[in-house]
Length: 630
Image (cartoon, rainbow, N blue to C red; front, side, top):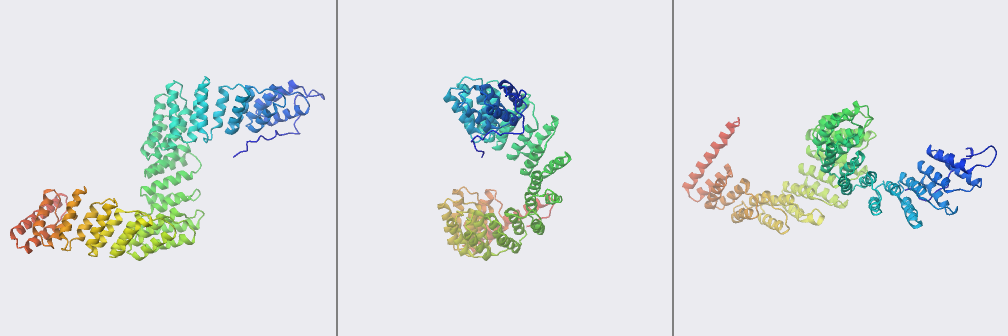
């Protein structure tokens, strides 16, 4: 930040003395005239030298000469010189007037030095120097960096209190300050106030309000201001459209951004680099990769400088849209290659068949000037995970360690998922321990992948322990992790532990869904817990969870092994009555249960129902053009 202590005015020894008459002493009137002329020509250094020369000549300085010197500093944006001249006035026994004060405040405003401008206002109030609207306008301009937007708003209010004429320029200054400070509510409020006072809305005012809304992701309000400008016949320029397109991008409204670009072309406003880059970024948010590529081509065709932001946005759009070939094509021009664009290309290769290509891109980034970071490594690990290449995923994690690339929770989760897909439960547990050693807090993804790995390995004890231990590790209770632990207990024939975990989920207010109850009912199908299976079916209804064919089929199998043929009969009939398609497993369980209970008539009923079900499925297959037989 600049120092607010005024420096000495510069001395230029080589410049001729102002107002010289032959070899005589300088004339005060001539010095004042030439100093004012230098100020109007923005030759502040010449004016400063003339001022110092007049002082050195011993002429009595008057208020007019000092005012001209302050004006010269103001036009040369030398706020510290203006303050130095004002500081001389008490020594010269001169009273500061409004002209000199305004010029000094303007000098501070042009350099955005709001503390000095505020100090001048306070001094003017204490000394009784008159201030006017020009003074306060200049002070508002000094607040343009947005840090003291409230001060600019207070100055606007003080103008109204002092019954000074509040012009549209004053409102525009404060709205611009609010835009920089990202206070969109105040910016829009002032715009509404201007309209209520029937002040003419200027394009620069509306542009500032649109930009304020865009920075706060209020795309609807930003587009409403654009529409109001068009209805009020306020001409929109490239800044207007660029701000509107940028606002649409923050709200993932890429189609609205495209419509604004079409309106821009219809209004014969030439799209600039900012508007085209904003359109590419908006399309990146909506995965509209074709539109993003067209924006990039328009940038090149318009003769603009190569824009790395637009290229990175187009690559991101290709990644989100799955257009990996187009994303790789963007990397052919190496002159404006950026890490963001390369990361997007690596992410676009997050497909099982493209894992080798993602690793190749990583090598090219390492060997080139771009380098790799956490994002590119995470994308490559995710690609290896989808391709079931857990060895390559772990190799990348190790490489990140010795290259001192920052690991993240996403990194560990991708590697854990890769090892879980490869049924490497031991490595999964080790990765979780590494996360704790690195002070990374596991999340729901970590818990689900870890417990699922133990479920696949039939390590029900470890799965159950991890599901209960995750809250202490910082991951919280995850419904998906609990479901995997329940399924693991079912595979280990530990139905009591599965039921206990279902109760713990209720006590801990973890959402129990269809998977939860289906897994728990499946764990009860060993025959000794058919009562619990039926109880879970009723609990599903009380919990508001829809009962599906999987849960009810598991319940029929539990009752079949009971054997409880009446319950099987009731369940299958209830499924048909509720419109739930009973599968062949349910009918077979019902027939087996009736056979064990020596109930031939119900068995014949179920056989007939199974035949009807098979005919229905076959008819559906014929109608759809296939040949499906059950």
